[in-house]
Amino acid sequence: MSHPTRHDVVIAGAGMVGASLAYALARSGLEVAQIEPTASAARQHVGFDERSITLSFGSARIYETLGLWSRIAAHATPIRTIQITEARRFGSARLDASELDVDALGYVVNARAFNTILNDAVSSEPKVRVYCPAKVTALQSPSDGEIGLAVSITQGDAIRTLQSPLVVGADGADSTVRKLLGIAATVHDYDQIALVANVDVENVQDGAAYERFTPHGPIAVLPNGGKRYGIVWMLDRAVGESIMALSDDAFALRLHDEFAGRLGMFSNVGQRFRYPLKLTRSAQLARTRAVLVGNAANALHPIGAQGFNLGLRDVALLAQLIVDAHRAGADIGADALLQRYSRERMADQRRTVLFTDVLARVFDAEWFAPLRPLGLLATQLFPPLRRQITRGAMGLGGRLTRLSRGLPL
Ligand SMILES: Cc1cc2nc3c(=O)[nH]c(=O)nc-3n(C[C@H](O)[C@H](O)[C@H](O)COP(=O)(O)OP(=O)(O)OC[C@H]3O[C@@H](n4cnc5c(N)ncnc54)[C@H](O)[C@@H]3O)c2cc1C
Image (cartoon, rainbow, N blue to C red; front, side, top):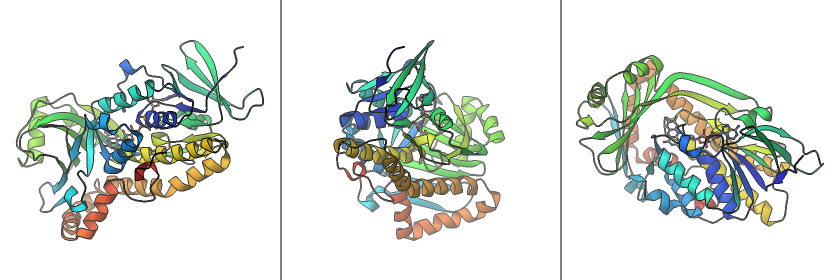
């Protein structure tokens, strides 16, 4: 039998979160293995589609510190204002970057372009070995009594064993690593879908994003450069399916009507995609020599555009703890390190999950509809409240890691 190949860290999953972690660690001198089942040319899943992803100001700063921002910025559109309105009711609010003395509240990137940049960056790092297409299928204690975990990966018909003091599950909401570790997950099905499409919009202001509360769910209209905008419309499942079934022209007209003509005509409708919406939370973040990040830890409802930004904050802390231990010649998979990661990520994760879950449920509840205009009015009239909401949306709440303060690892 061949000997296992050793790596400092084995990362399951090359989605946006896993790829970001692999890059951060390799740049700091660690030998990383990255396992990904889907060959890049065939990737159509959530990380590699035509969705518009909003990166928070905080996430942009992390990539700037990692030296990747100039590549991402070439494909990103800054959001300078967010205009929030309510269909068929009075009330609006406006969040503005200038109120916080920053250039942008966040940046919109196309998921496919973004993940391609991340994966290309990882592939050009000599310290990363990418196993693709391959998947993690088993985790065991090493047979030779070495410290760490033996990771079985399946590549076609072949099974290989990798060995590492630390395995990271960045393998998404249905994480295999989480299951192999025996960590339970709670799942709440919102019975909603997110309907996603790219469209041209006639009457838009430069750098403006729009959020519209409609009786069927909130619509986010996100700038993608020029008149091209990304639509993310969260809808009850049955209504969502009926809107999915509309012709392109009828869909464009429906958007025009939902905005009561304020944004003019919608046209040039791209392919529409639907995502069933669930909240999946892991009961624990770590077990002996293994840890979960990103969607494997918490997969959220997309309202508020928090999910990936939260996962990147997992990456920023985990990378910092691993790099510090590696430099000090300490064990990078030690229990104390993993417990510290779990402890320090807990507050941010709880807060973000709660915020998103409350928004998702409340905006779906009929009793809340008459109160929404009051919320918008309060936001507009009280600048401290507005600034607080804006800072949260920018990913600047809570304790900041070195990467999110602009300091290298
Ligand atoms: C409609 C919609 C809009 C969204 N908009 C935003 C937004 O604007 N801003 C934001 O911050 N977030 C947003 N999100 C959330 C964001 O998409 C996710 O948080 C993000 O994709 C999570 O990335 P990840 O790398 O953790 O997981 P994933 O993208 O799911 O990647 C997991 C990877 O693991 C791989 N894998 C699976 N099994 C195995 C295995 N056994 N071994 C190895 N690898 C494996 C998969 O192939 C995949 O590549 C949105 C989500 C949706 C649905």
